[in-house]
Image: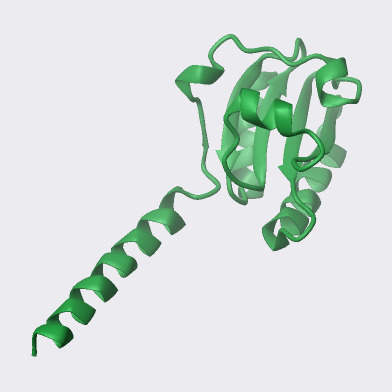
Length: 137
């Protein structure tokens, strides 16, 4: 009987954690460590956009990274002056550690000067990316 109780508690805890991850994953938010941090063209390996830059950190076998790539490419094509840059996290480990990126995909929204406006860990929704660009522009 106690074994059944342990299984029930573990399943309940896993369900609560899964729901929390689903709610918070992919949300664009400002983090304290990003405040005032700027990235230049040399750091991201591409020119910054005139109005904003969407920087995506990906890895080779990341399925949500593919969907995020499509979303960010669509948004960059819709909004003039916005550029999408994808960075392979495995090739740029020093930058990943410096920025505190813990999982892929992670998306940084930069303003025209390269200042980090917001970030999302996980796959962001298109509407959230467009709203974040409103803060960056």
